[in-house]
Image (tube, rainbow, N blue to C red; front, top):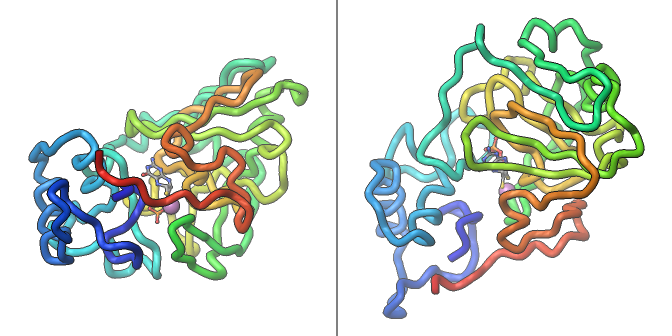
Length: 246
Ligand SMILES: Nc1nc2c(c(=O)[nH]1)N[C@H]1C(S)=C(S)[C@@H](COP(=O)(O)O)O[C@H]1N2
Ligand SMILES: [Mo]
Protein backbone atom coordinates (compact mmCIF):
# COMPACT_ATOMS: atom_id res chain seq x y z
CA UNK A 1 0.00 0.00 0.00
CA UNK A 2 1.30 3.36 -0.84
CA UNK A 3 2.04 5.48 2.12
CA UNK A 4 0.57 8.52 0.47
CA UNK A 5 -2.91 7.18 1.00
CA UNK A 6 -5.02 8.18 3.94
CA UNK A 7 -6.68 5.26 5.70
CA UNK A 8 -10.16 6.39 4.88
CA UNK A 9 -9.64 6.93 1.20
CA UNK A 10 -11.07 4.53 -1.28
CA UNK A 11 -8.82 2.31 -3.26
CA UNK A 12 -7.66 -1.23 -3.52
CA UNK A 13 -7.77 -3.07 -0.23
CA UNK A 14 -4.29 -3.05 1.24
CA UNK A 15 -2.83 -6.47 1.71
CA UNK A 16 -0.32 -7.86 4.13
CA UNK A 17 2.63 -9.85 2.91
CA UNK A 18 0.79 -13.16 3.16
CA UNK A 19 -1.92 -11.82 0.89
CA UNK A 20 -4.70 -11.63 3.43
CA UNK A 21 -6.75 -8.45 3.15
CA UNK A 22 -6.15 -5.92 5.89
CA UNK A 23 -9.45 -4.74 7.21
CA UNK A 24 -10.18 -1.15 8.12
CA UNK A 25 -10.09 -1.92 11.82
CA UNK A 26 -6.62 -3.41 11.56
CA UNK A 27 -5.37 -0.56 9.42
CA UNK A 28 -6.63 1.88 12.02
CA UNK A 29 -4.93 -0.13 14.74
CA UNK A 30 -1.71 0.02 12.74
CA UNK A 31 -2.03 3.78 12.58
CA UNK A 32 -2.35 3.85 16.34
CA UNK A 33 0.71 1.69 16.77
CA UNK A 34 2.62 3.82 14.30
CA UNK A 35 1.80 6.89 16.32
CA UNK A 36 3.23 5.18 19.37
CA UNK A 37 6.44 4.64 17.50
CA UNK A 38 6.33 0.87 17.26
CA UNK A 39 8.59 -0.19 14.45
CA UNK A 40 7.37 -2.24 11.53
CA UNK A 41 9.49 -2.78 8.47
CA UNK A 42 10.58 0.47 6.93
CA UNK A 43 7.92 0.49 4.25
CA UNK A 44 5.11 -0.46 6.55
CA UNK A 45 6.26 2.06 9.09
CA UNK A 46 6.21 4.80 6.49
CA UNK A 47 2.77 3.67 5.47
CA UNK A 48 1.25 3.90 8.89
CA UNK A 49 2.91 7.19 9.65
CA UNK A 50 1.67 8.91 6.53
CA UNK A 51 -1.73 9.61 7.96
CA UNK A 52 -1.84 11.17 11.24
CA UNK A 53 -3.86 10.31 13.96
CA UNK A 54 -1.30 11.32 16.42
CA UNK A 55 -3.72 13.37 18.42
CA UNK A 56 -6.09 10.45 18.63
CA UNK A 57 -4.49 7.15 17.79
CA UNK A 58 -6.97 4.75 16.32
CA UNK A 59 -9.00 7.42 14.62
CA UNK A 60 -8.62 8.12 10.96
CA UNK A 61 -6.72 11.03 9.47
CA UNK A 62 -9.84 13.16 9.35
CA UNK A 63 -9.59 15.34 12.41
CA UNK A 64 -12.54 17.40 13.58
CA UNK A 65 -12.39 20.98 12.45
CA UNK A 66 -10.04 20.45 9.55
CA UNK A 67 -12.74 21.17 7.00
CA UNK A 68 -12.36 18.09 4.87
CA UNK A 69 -8.58 18.04 4.84
CA UNK A 70 -6.75 14.84 5.60
CA UNK A 71 -3.71 15.53 7.70
CA UNK A 72 -0.46 14.05 6.48
CA UNK A 73 2.96 13.76 7.96
CA UNK A 74 5.86 11.48 7.07
CA UNK A 75 7.35 11.64 10.54
CA UNK A 76 5.86 10.46 13.77
CA UNK A 77 3.52 13.32 14.62
CA UNK A 78 4.29 16.99 14.06
CA UNK A 79 7.56 18.85 14.51
CA UNK A 80 7.85 21.40 17.31
CA UNK A 81 8.84 25.00 16.85
CA UNK A 82 9.24 28.17 18.87
CA UNK A 83 7.54 31.20 17.29
CA UNK A 84 10.23 33.56 18.58
CA UNK A 85 13.07 31.47 17.22
CA UNK A 86 11.44 30.42 13.97
CA UNK A 87 13.31 31.52 10.83
CA UNK A 88 12.70 31.00 7.14
CA UNK A 89 16.03 31.01 5.34
CA UNK A 90 16.45 31.86 1.67
CA UNK A 91 19.85 30.85 0.36
CA UNK A 92 21.74 29.76 -2.74
CA UNK A 93 21.68 31.83 -5.91
CA UNK A 94 20.52 35.03 -4.20
CA UNK A 95 22.16 38.43 -3.79
CA UNK A 96 20.94 38.75 -0.19
CA UNK A 97 20.59 35.55 1.80
CA UNK A 98 17.67 35.95 4.19
CA UNK A 99 16.78 34.61 7.58
CA UNK A 100 13.22 35.81 8.11
CA UNK A 101 11.46 35.82 11.45
CA UNK A 102 7.67 35.67 11.55
CA UNK A 103 7.68 39.44 12.07
CA UNK A 104 9.89 39.88 9.00
CA UNK A 105 7.45 37.80 6.97
CA UNK A 106 4.64 39.98 8.29
CA UNK A 107 6.47 43.07 7.04
CA UNK A 108 6.57 41.79 3.46
CA UNK A 109 3.55 42.49 1.23
CA UNK A 110 0.65 40.24 2.24
CA UNK A 111 -1.39 38.43 -0.38
CA UNK A 112 -4.61 36.49 0.00
CA UNK A 113 -6.25 34.03 -2.37
CA UNK A 114 -9.19 31.68 -2.18
CA UNK A 115 -8.47 28.48 -4.05
CA UNK A 116 -8.96 24.75 -3.92
CA UNK A 117 -6.70 22.17 -2.34
CA UNK A 118 -6.45 18.88 -4.20
CA UNK A 119 -4.54 15.81 -3.03
CA UNK A 120 -3.32 13.44 -5.70
CA UNK A 121 -5.10 10.57 -3.94
CA UNK A 122 -8.47 12.11 -4.73
CA UNK A 123 -9.72 14.27 -1.91
CA UNK A 124 -10.31 17.92 -2.47
CA UNK A 125 -11.33 20.95 -0.45
CA UNK A 126 -12.91 23.77 -2.45
CA UNK A 127 -12.48 27.48 -1.87
CA UNK A 128 -9.92 27.58 0.89
CA UNK A 129 -8.95 31.12 1.90
CA UNK A 130 -5.17 31.41 2.24
CA UNK A 131 -2.88 34.33 3.00
CA UNK A 132 0.79 35.02 3.43
CA UNK A 133 3.57 36.29 1.20
CA UNK A 134 3.79 35.41 -2.46
CA UNK A 135 6.80 33.19 -3.00
CA UNK A 136 7.78 35.61 -5.78
CA UNK A 137 7.87 38.46 -3.24
CA UNK A 138 10.12 36.41 -0.93
CA UNK A 139 12.40 35.62 -3.86
CA UNK A 140 12.48 39.28 -4.88
CA UNK A 141 13.38 40.30 -1.33
CA UNK A 142 16.32 37.89 -1.46
CA UNK A 143 17.42 39.06 -4.90
CA UNK A 144 17.06 35.55 -6.26
CA UNK A 145 18.53 35.09 -9.70
CA UNK A 146 15.45 34.73 -11.93
CA UNK A 147 17.46 32.69 -14.38
CA UNK A 148 18.33 30.13 -11.70
CA UNK A 149 16.53 26.96 -12.69
CA UNK A 150 15.21 25.57 -9.48
CA UNK A 151 13.86 26.02 -5.99
CA UNK A 152 14.16 23.51 -3.20
CA UNK A 153 11.99 23.67 -0.11
CA UNK A 154 13.01 22.25 3.25
CA UNK A 155 10.72 21.33 6.11
CA UNK A 156 11.84 21.52 9.72
CA UNK A 157 10.21 18.12 10.20
CA UNK A 158 13.62 16.95 8.99
CA UNK A 159 12.22 14.59 6.38
CA UNK A 160 10.02 16.28 3.79
CA UNK A 161 11.33 18.30 0.88
CA UNK A 162 9.79 19.74 -2.25
CA UNK A 163 10.83 21.37 -5.49
CA UNK A 164 9.63 23.81 -8.11
CA UNK A 165 11.25 25.31 -11.15
CA UNK A 166 11.99 29.02 -10.80
CA UNK A 167 9.35 29.71 -13.45
CA UNK A 168 6.74 27.82 -11.42
CA UNK A 169 7.83 29.49 -8.20
CA UNK A 170 7.33 32.97 -9.66
CA UNK A 171 3.66 32.31 -10.47
CA UNK A 172 1.13 34.57 -8.74
CA UNK A 173 -0.68 31.57 -7.24
CA UNK A 174 2.22 30.18 -5.21
CA UNK A 175 2.19 31.36 -1.63
CA UNK A 176 4.37 31.18 1.44
CA UNK A 177 1.26 30.78 3.56
CA UNK A 178 0.82 31.83 7.16
CA UNK A 179 -2.97 31.66 7.41
CA UNK A 180 -5.75 29.34 6.32
CA UNK A 181 -9.46 30.09 6.77
CA UNK A 182 -8.52 33.52 8.12
CA UNK A 183 -6.55 32.17 11.06
CA UNK A 184 -2.90 31.40 11.68
CA UNK A 185 -2.00 27.98 10.37
CA UNK A 186 -2.59 25.23 12.87
CA UNK A 187 0.27 22.91 13.73
CA UNK A 188 -1.20 19.97 11.82
CA UNK A 189 -1.54 22.14 8.70
CA UNK A 190 2.10 23.19 8.86
CA UNK A 191 2.43 26.06 11.34
CA UNK A 192 3.88 28.54 11.37
CA UNK A 193 4.57 28.64 7.63
CA UNK A 194 3.78 26.30 4.75
CA UNK A 195 3.96 26.45 1.03
CA UNK A 196 0.70 26.59 -0.94
CA UNK A 197 1.11 25.74 -4.61
CA UNK A 198 -2.40 26.30 -5.93
CA UNK A 199 -2.11 24.79 -9.42
CA UNK A 200 -0.46 21.58 -8.27
CA UNK A 201 -1.37 18.56 -6.18
CA UNK A 202 -1.18 18.89 -2.43
CA UNK A 203 2.14 17.13 -2.04
CA UNK A 204 3.81 20.24 -3.45
CA UNK A 205 2.41 22.29 -0.56
CA UNK A 206 5.16 21.49 1.92
CA UNK A 207 4.30 22.02 5.57
CA UNK A 208 6.56 23.38 8.33
CA UNK A 209 8.62 25.33 5.81
CA UNK A 210 12.02 26.45 7.08
CA UNK A 211 14.24 26.79 4.04
CA UNK A 212 14.18 27.84 0.42
CA UNK A 213 17.28 27.08 -1.62
CA UNK A 214 17.72 28.69 -5.01
CA UNK A 215 19.71 26.42 -7.28
CA UNK A 216 20.39 25.38 -10.83
CA UNK A 217 18.60 22.08 -11.20
CA UNK A 218 15.44 20.61 -9.71
CA UNK A 219 16.02 18.11 -6.92
CA UNK A 220 12.99 15.80 -6.72
CA UNK A 221 11.07 16.07 -3.45
CA UNK A 222 9.96 13.46 -0.96
CA UNK A 223 7.07 11.95 -2.93
CA UNK A 224 8.80 12.55 -6.23
CA UNK A 225 11.64 10.29 -5.14
CA UNK A 226 8.87 7.75 -4.54
CA UNK A 227 7.39 7.92 -8.01
CA UNK A 228 5.09 10.93 -8.16
CA UNK A 229 5.45 13.52 -10.91
CA UNK A 230 7.87 16.37 -10.35
CA UNK A 231 5.51 18.56 -12.35
CA UNK A 232 2.39 18.00 -10.31
CA UNK A 233 -0.16 20.06 -12.25
CA UNK A 234 -3.63 19.13 -11.09
CA UNK A 235 -5.18 16.93 -13.74
CA UNK A 236 -2.04 16.05 -15.63
CA UNK A 237 0.50 14.49 -13.31
CA UNK A 238 0.70 10.74 -13.03
CA UNK A 239 -1.30 10.31 -9.84
CA UNK A 240 0.81 7.27 -9.08
CA UNK A 241 -0.65 5.71 -6.00
CA UNK A 242 -0.41 2.02 -5.36
CA UNK A 243 2.73 0.10 -4.82
CA UNK A 244 2.62 -3.30 -3.19
CA UNK A 245 4.54 -3.73 0.02
CA UNK A 246 7.63 -5.60 -1.11
N1 LIG B 1 6.12 18.38 5.75
C1 LIG B 1 5.13 17.77 5.08
N2 LIG B 1 4.43 18.49 4.17
C2 LIG B 1 3.42 17.90 3.48
C3 LIG B 1 3.11 16.53 3.66
C4 LIG B 1 3.84 15.81 4.63
O1 LIG B 1 3.61 14.61 4.87
N3 LIG B 1 4.84 16.47 5.33
N4 LIG B 1 2.11 15.93 2.91
C5 LIG B 1 1.75 16.61 1.66
C6 LIG B 1 0.52 16.09 1.07
S1 LIG B 1 0.61 14.63 0.20
C7 LIG B 1 -0.65 16.79 1.12
S2 LIG B 1 -2.02 16.30 0.27
C8 LIG B 1 -0.76 18.00 1.95
C9 LIG B 1 -1.85 17.81 2.97
O2 LIG B 1 -2.00 18.99 3.71
P1 LIG B 1 -2.70 18.92 5.12
O3 LIG B 1 -1.96 17.89 5.93
O4 LIG B 1 -2.63 20.31 5.67
O5 LIG B 1 -4.12 18.49 4.87
O6 LIG B 1 0.44 18.32 2.63
C10 LIG B 1 1.61 18.11 1.87
N5 LIG B 1 2.73 18.65 2.59
MO1 LIG C 1 -1.42 14.45 -0.95
